[in-house]
Image (cartoon, rainbow, N blue to C red; front, side):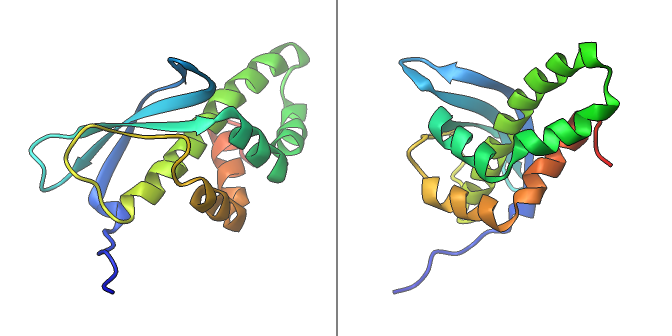
Length: 148
């Protein structure tokens, strides 16, 4: 059996477009939309990446994001902390969706707009984040301007 070719993620240019937003008809699923362009393509595609709120909660607890955020928020004025916490939730979802998209880019993408359902790549996403939890935490803190 021959393995499918693995394309380097770096051959794609990925731009975050918008999200997270709730998926219609799926109250426990959030999605982010990314524009993906490969040098050889005439134009980019849009990829919607879904993730369940249950999986997000499990990841957040496993990497102790709340604890890390609380430690970093000590430098923020108390009346601004709620805004930072709310924004951190969106950034966290965006980061998880991007990580899931990266997993999909490994075997390559066809040049069609597509959706990665919440049910796909669940185990792979869990494994990838478990291997490098600090990467996700650092991204969230950096986007909030709280990186040390």
